[in-house]
Image (cartoon, rainbow, N blue to C red):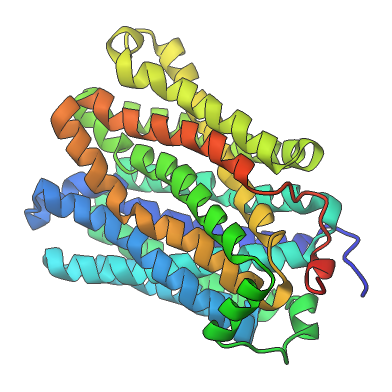
Amino acid sequence: MDLPQRFPVRVWLISFVGWMFDFYDLVLFSFLLIPIGRDLHLSEPQEALLLGVALGGSGIGGILFGYLSDLFGRKRIMTWTILIYSLGTALTALSTNGLSLLMFRLLTGLGVGGEWAVGHALLAESSPARMRGRASAMLQAGEPVGVALAALAGLLLSPFIGWRLVFLISSASAGVAFIVRRHLPESSLWHKQRDDRLSPAAAMRLLARRRLISPMLKGWLLGVFKLGTYWTCYTWLPKFLQNQLHQSIGRSALWMLTAQFGQFLGMMIFGFVADRHGRRRAFTVYSLLTAAALYPLAFHWEAVLPHPLLFWSIMFALGLGSGCTAGFGALLAELFPTEVRNFAMGTAYNCARGVQFFAPIIVSMFVAAYGLKGGLGVPMVLACATASWVWTLPETHTRDLAKIART
């Protein structure tokens, strides 16, 4: 089989833009939570539920569209998922109460969950083995770019045009689907095995026969810990900065952009570290950096806040450590054969993200009981768990994806 020799620039660029708007649409809600809650008269428990429902929906979307992508191809399903999350974003602007808002956020989550696995599977299958870690990281780097755009739109633009118009404008991301339809090449590995179509039950039997259920579960739990670190921190961080730390909207946006710049840089570096030193070492170092940055924010924020340079450095380090989410695409792709790769990746990663439905609820409970140190202590513990658990998985950075299909 002819293996890719060059970096697939077109596949990466289109997938990057799709993932950037995917994540933008997902997190925009957290930056608009204060005006939405005020206009729709939402209680604290309702806000926590609404923050989590899109994450829960992403788990369902990951399994469903991951399977459909193995069946109908990466390109077609990516088009569908982009249209779905864009529709959910547009409908969010028309919400009249908590129930309608919940339904539209669930729809957004379904599309978001499907798009991640499709993009990463396609890029992994189109990239040279020696560059898979960097390719995955460069794709995942769309995440902090999307969050930065959401911070600008949610914190700086919405006071002038209102949160509803922000959501309507954001739904223009549907245009990416037409770019995908016209310009994105299909995976050659998928084309070669397109006749080996498996039902979900048959896919699970294949995973069981090749003893891949255990790696899938371990990958899922790694995702629970790492994505839990991210979401228990970032879903509430804009509100923490404004309400608990009493920062202005402009200052809050600056701190969030600092963290996102750090995360973008961390992701770009992560690919080189993971390709050179292995996935497990890279995950460990980055996760420990995240925990080290969260500690002063959780337990010494009153001493840190009067020193802007120190606070800026901590926020930058927090973002830098968060860059290890860039490793999931390559690591999971290297665990599974082509005929079930998207199904297995989508199930492991998006079920881990779906569990984050509980993240805002858990954080709100700890904040109520222990204040800011309780809220930020949760992601600090999860970061340490990530650094430890990754060692239960095999080191995969030297694997050949085509040979996995034949083992």
